Image (tube, rainbow, N blue to C red; front, side):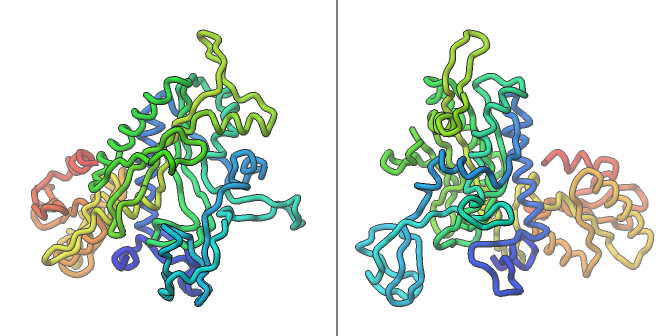
Length: 420
């Protein structure tokens, strides 16, 4: 957390006014990290596949969307209040053994009650019951209500998916564990529509594909956990979580659920619209089942930062996968008071910057520059020295091994791309 603040990954939200519980701001490097995570996901789930298209739905929708989905009546958490300090918390575990996390009072709670997690707002100039709307608690709703639009406008056939990345909002009773549980967050969700009877096969496929994606971005300490039947959401035929071992325990970073045909049927009934699918080849008509891989961008970012953080004898280093690192390389002139070195280094910096994020650093001695880039996870440091002026080669230092080698300037771009 200290590194994230110091190096511009994550800041407390509204910090100069004392903050606001459950809200965080991602700084310059955090914004780049999140962008790289989202880009890697979008490339894998949408652009590299012929059976998935993208969507960007509105955050605020007709409130009937959330009535049909069950969120208005049932999207709630059990909330308890301490009789002594009057702080309120989300109830976790058995009520018989509850102790107040704030003051430590044993069994001193007021009777649990349900608390709806959706943020209310008003649409229009008059604030009355007719103007009530909600900030979306998940991005999936926007996909389901656009199912027919996508069918009518795109050349898609079941099985196919609709993917979306976007903000979601939940008025958590007690946000905690840094950016793991917050009130504003980003989701990466896919609703993959399949023929009933083929859902079990696709469910297993998506679990394996999603787990492989995390391995491809270098995330370790992950596992698959099947949710017990009694713990499933009301719409779920089966759910498997992909979990990461945080310092505060094994926690979900993505859930893959078989949502059956619940969503399309619910919205068809509430809207009066036909949301069934007709097979263009055989003419069979059915309501598709849905396999939903749903991931949290902020949780993944936290897992990646945690996993990459290493304290070594002389340095702190973030061993981020090069694909996710905010800067792919840093360019240094060996000495900043030598115009020839600086000019050459600036030319290299500008050329590389056309292709990927590159940092420029000419402060202090070369060792301090290396350690500063290690802390933010930059995979390669490129130093322009006096030999560069003679043979157009530079020194490239590898972040993880700290080994150095000479590389031709004209080969630098391809050298770095090899590892992205």
